[in-house]
Image (cartoon, rainbow, N blue to C red; front, side):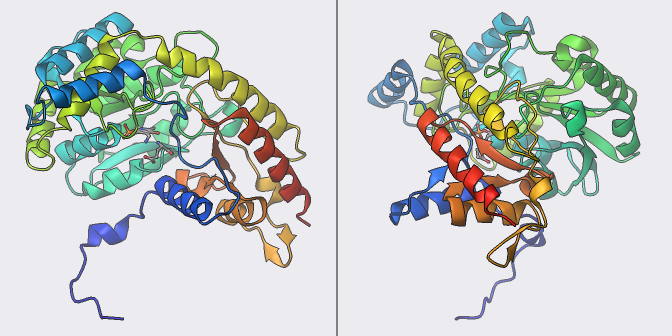
Length: 402
Ligand code: PMP
Ligand code: GLU
C-alpha cells in the first residue's frame, strides 16, 4: 500500500466518523449483499416526504430556482420560519434573526464555528446525540459531559450541572425531547439552566429537532417559556428533517440574536454559500402548508413505542425509560455485560451491538456513541413487523448468553 504522503489535520484525528451513519451504512451494505438484517440504527422517519412538499420541490426546479440564493436562505422561507415560531410558540423573531442551513446538523456546526475560541468549554448533558462533542471539538472547543441519571428519567440535575461549570464554560446543549433517550427536561431543570446561563453569560443551544414528535399530549416545557429573559442568549435549532420526513433534502434553521446569526452567515458564506435552492422551496411548502403530518407520524410511532418498551421491560435485567418524544428506545443492557457466547465476552455496549448484529442480525447503535455505555439505542421509525421480529431475535440472543 502506498505510504500516505500528506499529514492530516489534528482535528480529523480528534473525532470519529458519525457512528449512527456508520452503522447504518454497514447494515445497508450487509442487506444489499443478501443478509437478513433488521435495521434499527439510523434515526430517520420511515415515511415518505408529503406529496405537496415534493411537488413544491419539483415546481421550484421547473420554475428555474436552480441558482444561488441569499446566504441565510430565501426571504420567504425565513419569513415562514418566523411565522411558525409565532404561531406554534408565541415567540417573535425577525427574518434577520433566522439562518436556513443544510440540515440541523449544519446549523449546529455553524453555531460553534461562530462562537468558540480554542479551549472554550461547552456543557453536554450525557447521554447526548453523537455529533455534539465532535461539533464542539471541530470548532476548537472542549465538550464537558454532564451526566444524566436513568433513575431520574434522564432529567438534568441542577447540582450536577453546577458541578461541571467552570470559568471557561461558554455554552450548553439542550435537547428535549432527547436523542437518544426520548426524555424531556423538567421545568425545574430548565429554570436552573436559565439562572446559570444568565449569571455567567452562556449561550443556550436548544436543539428542538424532535419537538413535533411527542407523546402524552402535554405541551413540553421550553427554556424560552420558562425564562423568557434568556432569549438574548439562546439559539433555537430546528428543521424539517424529522417533522416532515425530509432527511435527504438537508434543510435546517437557527433562530437567535442577530449578531450571532450574522456571524454564522459569514461562516456559511465562506463554506456552503447557501442551502440547496429547490429544497428551500420544498421546506417553504412544508412550513406553510397543512401541519397535520407530524401528528400522523406520531400516532403511528406511539403504538411502536408502547410495544417496544413493554417487550424490552419484560426481559429480565433490562430497564428502559419510556420515551416522551422522538423515536428511539434506549434500554439498559448492563446486567448482561460480562456474559459470553461461544467464548466471546460482552464487555460493553459496542460488543453488545456487534453481538446483536452478528448473531441476531439486528442493527443498533451502541450507547458508548452517546456517552452511555450501559445502553444500546434502537430507532422505532420502522414497521411493527420489523419491531416484533427484532424483539424476538434480541430476546433469543440475550437468552443465549451464558
Ligand atoms: N439534532 C439531533 C438531536 C438529531 O437527532 C439530528 C438527526 N440527525 C439532528 C440534530 C440533525 O438533523 P438533520 O441534520 O438531519 O436536519
Ligand atoms: N439523528 C439521526 C440519528 O441519530 C440521523 C443520523 C445522524 O445524523 O446522526 O440516527
